[in-house]
Amino acid sequence: MDAEVVQLSPRELFGLDLKIKRHAVLCSVGFLILLPLGSLVARYLRTFTRGWFWPHALIQFVIAGPVIFAGWALAHQAVNIIPGQNFNDKHKKIGLALLILYLMQLMLGLFIHFVKLPFMGGHRPPQNYFHAILGLAIIALAFYQVHYGINTEWIFYTGIIIDPRAMHAWTALIVVFWVLYALGLALLPRQYKQESEGRMRAREEEKAI
Image (cartoon, rainbow, N blue to C red):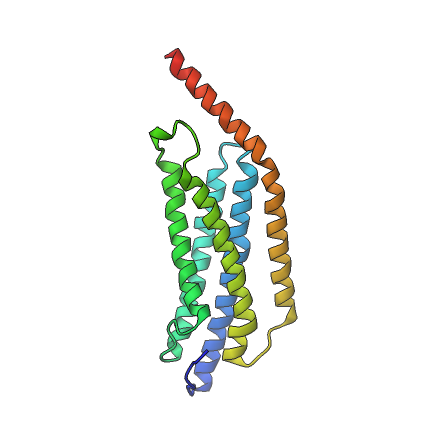
């Protein structure tokens, strides 16, 4: 990091500290709890109910969206307290990238759900796979971002070592998510079988017409 030394008043320091803490909490909840939860909902529910999309969308957009946007806005406000600090280090650049990727993922999810390509013959189009891979990439990058924020960014700007319980929580969240997601992959054969049966029923209905 190559930030300039800037003198802040006690009031500005208090405001900066408060915004950074709130930003950390909101973005951690949004990216490390809500987005992984929405991903797991899609991974597990889709093999048991055709109505899995709406719980998934509710978590990923309606609930996680305001939390993530609020967390990002607080970071932007905190950065503006210190002149010349916009996107001057890795944490800030990754934060912007995560926001852009999250918005892209939302738009892609809506496109996949509401726009059905007729030439795929009922088969899963490539964008479905890309949506899943991008979602996992966002979650993985978010875990790295929070880790970097806790162990580097926070210490650099405050000089305070964060409570070790924060890293314990980070470790627990990353282990729980990837273990549950890996276990959910065991449902893929069931999912593919259901999709194959659905295509067969569609062909039979077309022949009947």
